[in-house]
Amino acid sequence: MRAQFAFCVAAMLVATVAPSAAPSEMPPQDWRDVNPNNLVLIDTRYGQVAVEVAPEFAPKHVERLRALIRAHFYDGLSFYRVIDGFVAQGGIGEGTAATKDHPKQAASLKRWPPLKAEFDRPIGRDLVFTPLGNADLFAPAVGHVNGFPVGRDGKDGREWIIHCPGTFAFARDNAADTASTEFYIVIGEMPRRLDRNLTAFGRVIDGMQYLQKLERGDPKVENGVIQDTRKRDPIIRMRLAADIPGKDRPKYQVMRTDSESFAKEKTLRKNPAPEFYVRTPPPVLDICNMPVPVRPAER
Amino acid sequence: MRAQFAFCVAAMLVATVAPSAAPSEMPPQDWRDVNPNNLVLIDTRYGQVAVEVAPEFAPKHVERLRALIRAHFYDGLSFYRVIDGFVAQGGIGEGTAATKDHPKQAASLKRWPPLKAEFDRPIGRDLVFTPLGNADLFAPAVGHVNGFPVGRDGKDGREWIIHCPGTFAFARDNAADTASTEFYIVIGEMPRRLDRNLTAFGRVIDGMQYLQKLERGDPKVENGVIQDTRKRDPIIRMRLAADIPGKDRPKYQVMRTDSESFAKEKTLRKNPAPEFYVRTPPPVLDICNMPVPVRPAER
Image 1: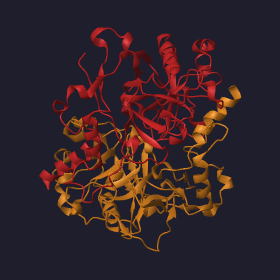
Image 2 (image 1 turned 90 degrees about the vertical axis):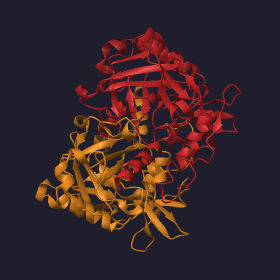
Image 3 (image 1 turned 180 degrees about the horizontal axis):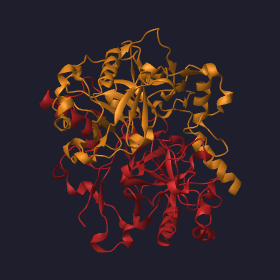
Image 4 (image 1 turned 120 degrees about the vertical axis):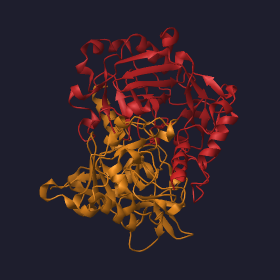
C-alpha cells in the first residue's frame, strides 16, 4: 500500500495541473513566449499575479488597460468586492463603492471615458481555433485560441473568451458600453452566463492561489463590498512586463493550443491514470477544466 | 451611471451567492435543519469550515469519520497536500507524506482498517431526487438530493455525489477498497472524472473561503505535498456538532432542493437580472454552479 499510494497521489495530480510529459519531451515549437506587451503583473500582499491579455479579442480594452497601468491608476487601489466562488473586483469607477476612499485617483476618472463593448469578435482567419473535441452546455462550439478558452457561434459568426476561473474582464454598468476602469477576475465556478455580456479579454497564467487568499466580502452586505476599508486587500501595483527592464522582467511560455503537445494533454486529462481510475471516466472535457500549461521562461 | 452601477453589482451578485428572495419570503418548510450528527466542523487558522455529510450515500464512511473525529485523530494534523484549482488533502495515512511527522497518530493507524468503497448507491425511493432540468456533460442525469449535487445512471440503477467545489471525500490508494483516514475537499474546478471513483460523501456548507486561503503546494514537487512542514496549515481540530453542547453548537439550515423555493432559485440563476444581461444567457445550468442556499439557524 505504501508504494502504491504515492502513485495514487500522483495520479490525482497529473490529472489536474502537471503537464503530461516532462518539459524535455515537449518540442520547443509547441510553446510560445508571452508577449511582454500583453503580460500584466498585479502585485498583491500574497504574491504576484500574472495575467495575459488578448488584444485580438478586445483591442480597445487592452489599450485602455495599458494606459491605466502606465498612469499608475491602479497602484494603491484595492480588491474591494470579492465574492467567494465568483469574482474578485478591483479598482474604482464613477460612483462605485470604493471610489470615495481614493479621492486622488477618483479625480482622474474623467480621463477614462466609457468604452464601446468588445464582448465578442468576428470569427476570422487571423486566429487558429482548436476545438475542445466535445460538446458544451452553453456554447455551440468551444475550444482554444492562443491558450484562451473560447466559445463560438457559427450562425452569427462570432467568437468570445469564456468566463472560466482566472478569466480577466472589465466590469460595467447596466448599459453595454459603460466599462471604463474597473476589472474583475473570476475566482470560482465558471459564471458562463456572463459570456458575451462583458468584455473578457485575459486570463491568469500564474498566481491564481494568491487571488484565492484575498479577503472576501459578505455577499449579503452591499453585494459583497468589503465594508471595513482596512480589510480590503490592496492592489499594491500593476505593471506591464514590457515596462520592466532586463532580467527583472518576468517571462512566461504558454503551450500552443494548436500543438500536438496540447492534443496529448487533452487526451491524458480524460483518463490520466488508468491504474487509479477503477471506473473509466466519461471521455469528456469541460472547457473550464482543461488547463493550458504555462511555464516560466529564462530571463 | 451612478445609480445604475449599484444595480449592476447587485445583478452580478444575485446571480451567484445570494438567495433570490428575502428569507422572509421563503416559506419555513422549504428549509431543513442540518442534523448535528452529520455536521462536521473543521477549525483552521483562517476560520471554521462546516461540512455536511450524507450517511445515505456512504454509511460506513460517515461512521468512520465520526469515530475518527471522536478519537481526536485529526486534531493537530495538517492540510499537507493542497493543489490550487483541485483539492485540499488532509490527515495522515499508511505510508503517505505527512505520516512521519505525526508519530503519535501514526501509531494509531492500525485501528482504522481500509474501508469498502461506497462510490455510489442504488437509486432508491428513500431519497427524493430533483432533476436539475437540463443535460450534463458527464452523467446521464444530474440533480439534487438533500442539497447534494448528485449524478444518476438509470441503466445501472446507481446514483452518486458529484465532485464539485466543496465536495468532501476520502482519499484512497490505487485499489478501490483502500480508503481509511485521509480526506480531501475539492477547492477548484470540478474534477468530474473522480465521480464514482472515490467515495464522495459530504459538502462544505460554510467557510469555503477559509479553505481557499490554505497554503498551497507546488504540484511539480512530490505531487503537491508541501515540503516545508512548518508551512502546512494545521487542522486545529475537527468536531461533530452533536458533541458541542448547548448554544455553542453551530446550527445551519439548508434549502430543501425539492422545494418551490429552490425551483425559483434555479430559474433565477439562469438570468438573474434581465436589466444587466444585454444578451439573454443560455437557459442552462451546470450542476456544480448551482449553489444550494444555506443559512445559520438560531442557536
